[in-house]
Length: 143
Image (cartoon, rainbow, N blue to C red; front, side, top):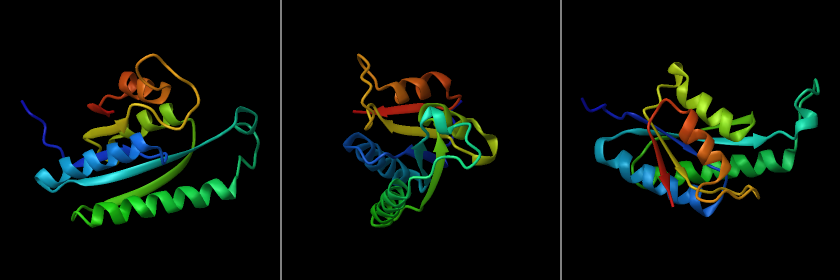
Protein backbone atom coordinates (compact mmCIF):
# COMPACT_ATOMS: atom_id res chain seq x y z
CA UNK A 1 0.00 0.00 0.00
CA UNK A 2 1.44 3.36 -1.04
CA UNK A 3 1.81 6.11 1.53
CA UNK A 4 0.65 9.57 0.58
CA UNK A 5 3.36 12.16 1.05
CA UNK A 6 2.16 15.44 2.54
CA UNK A 7 5.21 16.85 4.30
CA UNK A 8 8.85 16.67 3.21
CA UNK A 9 11.82 17.35 5.49
CA UNK A 10 14.92 18.88 3.86
CA UNK A 11 18.01 19.36 6.03
CA UNK A 12 19.91 22.45 4.83
CA UNK A 13 23.50 23.40 5.57
CA UNK A 14 24.18 25.69 2.61
CA UNK A 15 26.21 23.12 0.66
CA UNK A 16 25.58 22.56 -3.05
CA UNK A 17 24.20 19.10 -2.30
CA UNK A 18 21.69 20.43 0.24
CA UNK A 19 20.49 23.02 -2.31
CA UNK A 20 20.12 20.24 -4.91
CA UNK A 21 18.12 18.28 -2.33
CA UNK A 22 15.91 21.35 -1.78
CA UNK A 23 15.31 21.60 -5.53
CA UNK A 24 14.39 17.90 -5.66
CA UNK A 25 12.02 18.32 -2.70
CA UNK A 26 10.37 21.29 -4.43
CA UNK A 27 9.98 19.18 -7.59
CA UNK A 28 8.38 16.33 -5.61
CA UNK A 29 6.18 18.74 -3.64
CA UNK A 30 4.83 20.30 -6.83
CA UNK A 31 3.54 16.91 -7.99
CA UNK A 32 0.91 16.69 -5.25
CA UNK A 33 0.89 20.07 -3.47
CA UNK A 34 2.93 19.01 -0.45
CA UNK A 35 4.67 21.29 2.03
CA UNK A 36 8.34 21.36 2.95
CA UNK A 37 10.05 21.82 6.29
CA UNK A 38 13.65 22.98 5.96
CA UNK A 39 15.72 22.10 8.99
CA UNK A 40 19.09 23.64 9.71
CA UNK A 41 21.19 22.38 12.58
CA UNK A 42 23.76 24.56 14.32
CA UNK A 43 26.36 21.97 15.41
CA UNK A 44 27.42 22.18 19.04
CA UNK A 45 31.10 21.62 19.90
CA UNK A 46 31.36 18.81 22.45
CA UNK A 47 32.67 20.96 25.32
CA UNK A 48 29.67 23.29 25.10
CA UNK A 49 27.07 20.53 25.06
CA UNK A 50 27.07 20.47 28.88
CA UNK A 51 27.56 24.22 29.43
CA UNK A 52 24.45 25.78 31.08
CA UNK A 53 24.36 28.66 28.59
CA UNK A 54 24.89 26.41 25.60
CA UNK A 55 26.89 27.50 22.57
CA UNK A 56 25.91 30.70 20.78
CA UNK A 57 27.71 31.79 17.65
CA UNK A 58 25.68 34.74 16.43
CA UNK A 59 27.42 34.90 13.04
CA UNK A 60 26.41 31.31 12.28
CA UNK A 61 22.87 31.91 13.54
CA UNK A 62 22.39 34.88 11.20
CA UNK A 63 23.82 32.83 8.30
CA UNK A 64 21.34 30.04 9.05
CA UNK A 65 18.44 32.52 9.15
CA UNK A 66 19.51 33.87 5.74
CA UNK A 67 19.77 30.33 4.38
CA UNK A 68 16.28 29.43 5.58
CA UNK A 69 14.81 32.67 4.22
CA UNK A 70 16.48 32.03 0.86
CA UNK A 71 15.01 28.50 0.81
CA UNK A 72 11.56 29.90 1.59
CA UNK A 73 11.81 32.33 -1.35
CA UNK A 74 13.13 29.59 -3.67
CA UNK A 75 10.15 27.35 -2.82
CA UNK A 76 7.62 30.19 -3.03
CA UNK A 77 8.75 30.95 -6.60
CA UNK A 78 7.54 27.44 -7.48
CA UNK A 79 4.32 27.79 -5.47
CA UNK A 80 5.43 25.62 -2.55
CA UNK A 81 5.01 26.50 1.12
CA UNK A 82 8.23 26.06 3.09
CA UNK A 83 8.65 26.41 6.83
CA UNK A 84 12.16 26.90 8.17
CA UNK A 85 13.35 25.59 11.54
CA UNK A 86 16.71 25.96 13.22
CA UNK A 87 17.90 23.86 16.13
CA UNK A 88 21.21 23.47 17.94
CA UNK A 89 22.67 20.01 18.32
CA UNK A 90 24.23 17.08 16.48
CA UNK A 91 23.06 17.08 12.82
CA UNK A 92 22.64 13.37 12.03
CA UNK A 93 20.97 12.48 15.30
CA UNK A 94 18.72 15.54 15.40
CA UNK A 95 17.55 15.20 11.78
CA UNK A 96 16.55 11.57 12.40
CA UNK A 97 14.80 12.48 15.67
CA UNK A 98 12.95 15.36 13.99
CA UNK A 99 11.81 13.08 11.15
CA UNK A 100 10.73 10.33 13.55
CA UNK A 101 8.80 12.67 15.88
CA UNK A 102 5.11 12.03 15.23
CA UNK A 103 4.08 15.63 15.97
CA UNK A 104 6.22 16.88 13.04
CA UNK A 105 4.21 14.69 10.60
CA UNK A 106 7.15 14.12 8.24
CA UNK A 107 6.49 11.64 5.43
CA UNK A 108 9.78 11.83 3.50
CA UNK A 109 13.32 13.09 4.12
CA UNK A 110 15.18 14.50 1.10
CA UNK A 111 18.83 15.32 1.72
CA UNK A 112 22.17 15.72 0.00
CA UNK A 113 24.67 12.90 0.10
CA UNK A 114 27.39 15.18 1.50
CA UNK A 115 27.21 18.44 3.38
CA UNK A 116 29.77 20.93 4.58
CA UNK A 117 31.30 18.63 7.17
CA UNK A 118 34.98 17.86 6.72
CA UNK A 119 34.52 14.21 7.62
CA UNK A 120 34.54 12.02 4.53
CA UNK A 121 32.96 8.62 4.21
CA UNK A 122 33.44 6.31 1.22
CA UNK A 123 29.99 6.71 -0.37
CA UNK A 124 27.88 8.93 1.89
CA UNK A 125 28.62 11.74 4.27
CA UNK A 126 28.43 10.79 7.93
CA UNK A 127 25.24 12.82 8.50
CA UNK A 128 23.32 11.35 5.55
CA UNK A 129 24.54 7.88 6.49
CA UNK A 130 23.29 8.32 10.07
CA UNK A 131 19.87 9.61 8.94
CA UNK A 132 19.54 6.83 6.37
CA UNK A 133 19.99 4.20 9.08
CA UNK A 134 18.13 5.85 11.97
CA UNK A 135 15.10 7.40 10.26
CA UNK A 136 11.83 5.48 10.36
CA UNK A 137 10.67 7.56 7.40
CA UNK A 138 11.78 7.04 3.79
CA UNK A 139 15.00 8.89 2.94
CA UNK A 140 15.89 10.12 -0.54
CA UNK A 141 19.60 10.90 -0.93
CA UNK A 142 20.39 13.41 -3.69
CA UNK A 143 23.83 13.55 -5.34
